[in-house]
Length: 321
Image 1 (cartoon, rainbow, N blue to C red):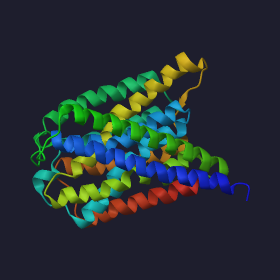
Image 2 (image 1 turned 90 degrees about the vertical axis):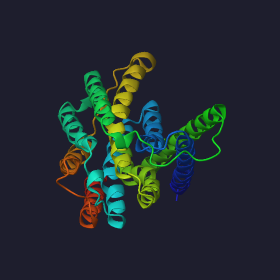
Image 3 (image 1 turned 90 degrees about the horizontal axis):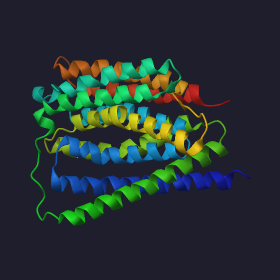
Image 4 (image 1 turned 60 degrees about the vertical axis):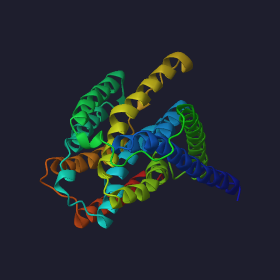
């Protein structure tokens, strides 16, 4: 009974965080839709909560949560969300399934696997991922579908100053939700000793961040828009931008604020499970990028099943006895 108030506090914090992060994402999505509605802009809006949760977790000295969120949300986007959307709106358009950007998931996953042998993230690792991001940027510029709006801007465009205010409010609200998420994970992991912050990142925080994407992706598919590339871009933003930012932030805080040799670990469960599954998914996406594999109902079901297997394995190997 003594642990019940802490558990309730953690649950309430997670519920509040879910609402705040969802609203922040929707506000940012509305702003970008009036400005330039493309898969890239939609990806940035939906990636904002992930980035805020990761960076706030790093600042609050929860590296297991920060790294776990990066890899778990990337995997969830490429399996759970992509699979569910594929089941209900199969991807039979040949032009849509040939995307050079999709093939970039595999090399990033392989680099992450190599970095894991060190057991921690170093400055060089951050530079490598950031360099890969620059390469991906030039690859993305060759894909016209990522830069051309699929829908005209909504009528009644707002004044730039008002859009700026909305962006600031979205970031502030998202930051509050990120703080609530980190505090909620701290409360839950402290109350239930069997659940580590890394395990909660896989089983709780990651679904909380990606499940709202399902409705948006389905709506975009029904409207004939490219919802699939949006999900791939989110995963790429995680690996080639958010991960380097987390590494640089951690190293900067260690040098200027903590004055202690506290390294940014690469959690073993994330390295052994998330990274390996990202590599497998990357091979599949490589086939899609070349046009040799099409994502239909059967492939979507396989992706959802793969995510279910990931959750089961993470729970089985991550719970502390």
